[in-house]
Image (tube, rainbow, N blue to C red; front, side, top):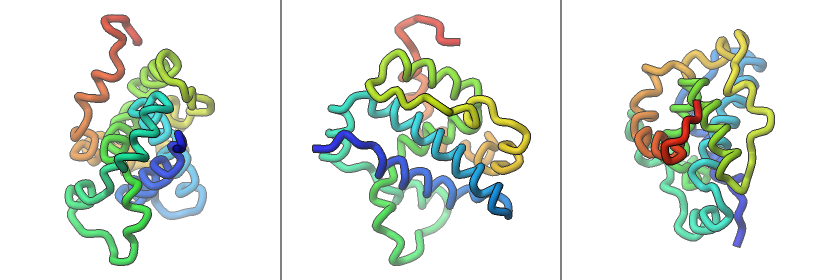
Length: 170
């Protein structure tokens, strides 16, 4: 059994980018994809910190995008369903929280370093310290009010996962 998060990361990133598209231009789309992928990777690593957690995910399957699609106000195009089965609602919700709050994302990086077997925290600067061009590429994806209905779904569990039994991560 695999302990690879790649399918969940790819599908959840794709869902976020479809729900909150970047403004026109190849550079904006590439920067938005990099930021979304970083947020989803960090969220997936937090949500499934051990190889056993990932194996259980593969055994039980992620939640799929159905609930998220309904929240976004529509059904996905027909024939576009295969990748959507790998979308994980919790991972997408946590990624939306991280995208909307770079300080929270930096806190999540510190938490992953403390507890995860994966340590997928290298090169997350676009997520934790977005530059001006990064922000211009993600006006919808990083807007706290626009992502709130997705971010709020599982925010309490994220906040719980970021605590270190009273230790301060800030």
